[in-house]
Image (cartoon, rainbow, N blue to C red; front, side):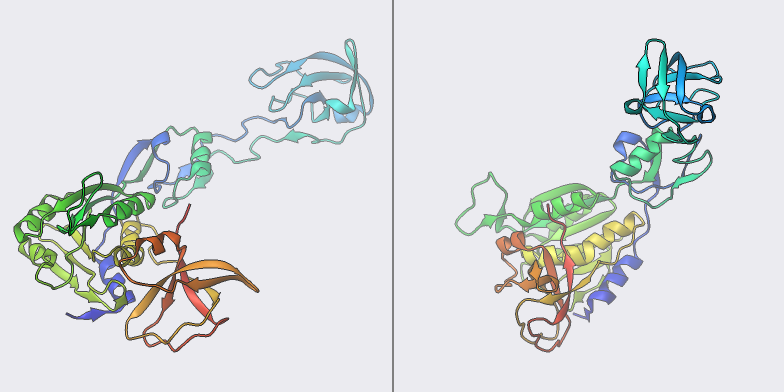
Length: 396
């Protein structure tokens, strides 16, 4: 099989992906989705000049001294009359400033005596929020392509939006093969293990914003694998296991029965060499991941996460950063190696240490890792303190 570098394989995969179309959702259902439109303000915010404190609305030009109290302005219930010389209006935070007033004396600085209030000197604009201070009518508040987090969703609401156009959530079908795995609460046979790969991948996909459908328990029969892939709907099909070329690795052949146009045959990566990618005869992209959990999870970070991002039209390149090694590492072999590692405090900031056991079947090691440490092909031995690249993992 032809080996491709990680970068070349990812580029070939992304070249086959097209951004999904838009869908209109109620604002409360749009959290985490990508905007498919710009959001503009329909009016000023705030729409009227208002008080930033509880106190007394006054005319600053009147200077210090007593004021006649002529009314009250509260949030949602403004004072409708004008304010004349020598007058004051009791005002509360967020309430509209009466016509004629240009400042607010905070209540701690004033002294009320019946129907009058004694106020100090004050400057124009003190404790006042001007209309349009947050944004102006017609202004663009959010741009197409931004992900709606709680704060951006709040901004949409402040602009009077109850529905927004967003990129449709990617739908991913996950097909797990292999008679050696069972899912709890089923009891494993003497030669079986619990399935940890597909639950983990499904959780990763949901974290990345995809809607998922999981098909498990597919028997190691070519026709069974073929039928499971054929029935898997969605924008992307991901298979787990059976990706290599052994007698029981049937996914490539089964996908070939469905007209697979192979774009990536194998990747020069460790772990995860058997990873492949192609386009099925009906146009659905298919990513084949190895069955060992560490191999599947590493390649999910390197390839599956960028594919989901590309379906939404988001930047798809993994974010790498440079940190210092805690301890030495041996020279690397011919394949790019992504080592499970943990980020720790160092003398000059954050540092990284790789786990000693990098076997691709280990789930516990991945549960303790918060980064993948990148070692380029044929990289020489590295010493403690050397700079290396890491891919941080999203952890709770």
